[in-house]
Image 1 (tube, rainbow, N blue to C red):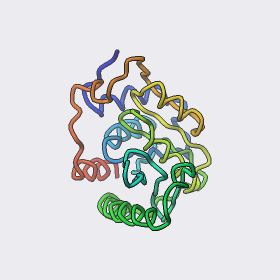
Image 2: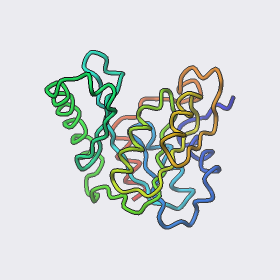
Image 3: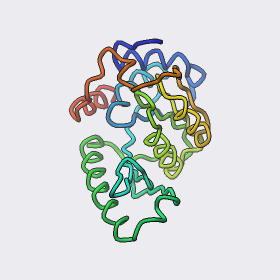
Image 4: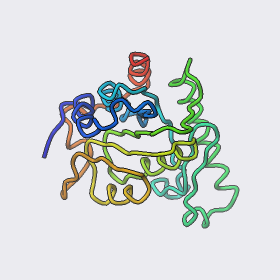
Length: 210
């Protein structure tokens, strides 16, 4: 088992598995907010690729928020999981979408200040997070990236559970997961420093990368 010093160190090691993408002008590295952004910054630096942020909000079933019936992303993009969504009334869906849209707009306004709207048409989108526990956010991000026009979507993470990895293999074009321990536990277990990433750190990272 490898323990990473912090998210930046994890990103540097993860980038070693993505060197085939160096020089590809279509590559865009997308950090999932918030913990994925410092990892993505290290990957983007190594690949000499632009860094951007992908704000995805899961749409949770009202009485079981951890169960996602879909997700929303920038530009009004919505992805639905029809099986759990079919058990909800339209009013229930609308209420969840409204609440999550408000938070998405808040984060987009904060992180994308001065940036053009995210446009992935024709891009190879490398979606980066700090780890995969259930993989629900990453699966939603793949759907959002495709809706935004990405022609290829790669998910890259330093560590993940075997079930999450296997679920993503079925939806992404490629999944790079540096570690898939059988006794996974939790993402934090694989980091010496796994502090909660504040909004200010995300903004600083994005500004530093231009």
